[in-house]
Image 1 (tube, one colour):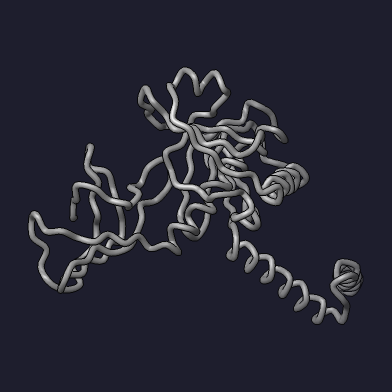
Image 2 (tube, rainbow, N blue to C red; image 1 turned 45 degrees about the vertical axis):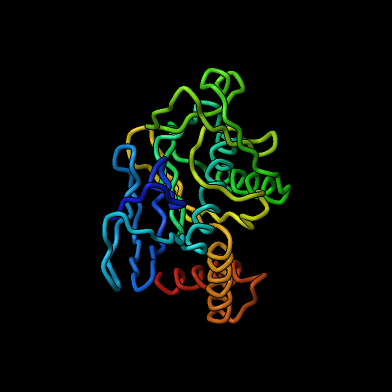
Length: 255
């Protein structure tokens, strides 16, 4: 673990995973695989690739920009997802936990029953509408009481100081958050919800993808649909009818 007096690396907090990257100096390279908080200090976890690192040494810190950006997509859309769930399901919905990393997002929330397919679709469409509106993300530092008066949502399990950071996306979402985010909601590109399930009494979990990974998931579904259509000698438009006919035929043959 390497601790520096200042760093651009984001330490794991608020559901967002720690940054990865590298610390370097002449003849020295340290691969950072995770970043964590150690009291007031930020620790870079990883391994020495070359050279020796000494106390007092000056290092250049470089965050893996690609991983950071993909994490930002998932973090920013989590705020939109939270607001959309409250609009579609009701204001009783509150965040109970989250995980935001470069590959996906996981969002746990309070709700008394399974989310119906139509409701889930409505949530996904509402978020994608906000993405296309390309809201600018604005941040402001203010007193915690002022933030609450403005209606800012607090994240589950977080402890806040007297001064907090408020992240706003148009008139759709306002939350207390210390994490990293995109510049505009349009940067997210696309949200694709991949699953919804219960994880505890009164707690549901949504998992989703954004950006390029969301598009890849849509393409994979499209390819699967084409494969099935080919198997039943149909087209994408009539594949459902063809499968129903096949099932009915099999049932008749079994009789």
